Length: 494
Image 1 (tube, rainbow, N blue to C red):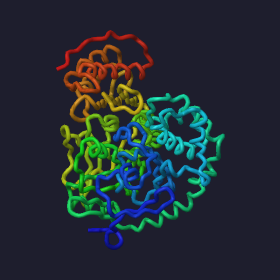
Image 2 (image 1 turned 90 degrees about the vertical axis):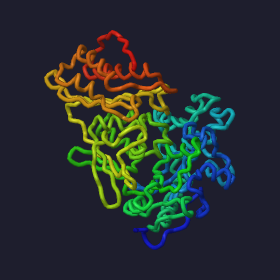
Image 3 (image 1 turned 30 degrees about the vertical axis):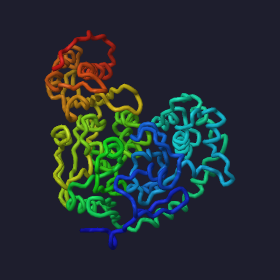
Image 4 (image 1 turned 45 degrees about the vertical axis):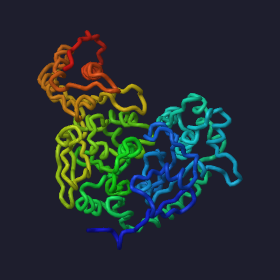
């Protein structure tokens, strides 16, 4: 069994603000938030929701990647300590000037009255700090996107927006300590990379950080019941909300071999460890409809942590990426030890909580065919709140029309069944028919053959059924440029 160079290391190493940290006494489920507050007395990072929604716990994490050192906002409440090996953690305390003066972001928040009770303010400051370092003079759209994952219940957002617009009048991002120290931090993080596996704990109470992709495969073959953690945007809630025992845990967020995106012969291959943030621009450039969808997955902190491979492997019926990828005809590479197999993504989902994944097998990559130039492709997400909300229903449509006739159709939905699922009866009702309002209206009746949705806190069964049918109507109207009104029909829900 490969373990990298030499015996396993028995500690994780990272930088906290300006300090080098080596930890050997941590539990597999210990979160960064708890460690900061309970073991380091850094109280600026707050616990609000403990599920990655409110942003009060926002910190920056710097990681070395293909583009060098990149700092991203993350939710400390669901980020596990074990995932931080070789990273730089920056908390709000690090923003204080040498003379104790406020940071430009903090001073702008004070002057523009961006804080009232103050509980959420450190999280806003850290999100704006991360944005300011990347874009010193951001547009309103970029500010709003950076703050999707930060909630304020007191002040409202306009004062915070004014502060965000004004930060660069208080200082220069290029002269900020985080920018000035970039070369030194890069050197220190590089030195921490010794190519060794990390193992901490004994028996089931173990956490492992693989040395390489091959090492990861060997670990899973030896311990097939171990919990794999990439971004922890789902697994974090298993701990903070469900109190589940997830040990032993294998942290794979640092495996750069799983973080590649490539394209060949009209197929985009996405490594299982690619985050939403890293995938967004590439996918949006090649498949434009995926850009706005990714922008609505959680807040920016969640997109910086969560991975497309994890969203698929988790098998949730309301995962946002499987329906559009199924509609595009994506396939999945699964690996166990040195063996690989590739299956259609739609065949991966067997039943609620069950996927076609053998013990010790893991998702290695997803392969996404690009839509043909003349094809129509769209994705529609329905949720109670537009930003940072979980899907009630999501429809993805991939259709080609030749001489006015539907030549091919792949339609998939999330939130409508126990798994992400094709609408095969609806597809059959469209194929070979004219792409007309009459065909669409007739096909809407076929939804009852494909789906029997449930009622839950996000939507009723009747609402989901009606929304699903109307998404087909919306797709037709957008692809044809028509605004012809349709009569609303009621359908019985089984």
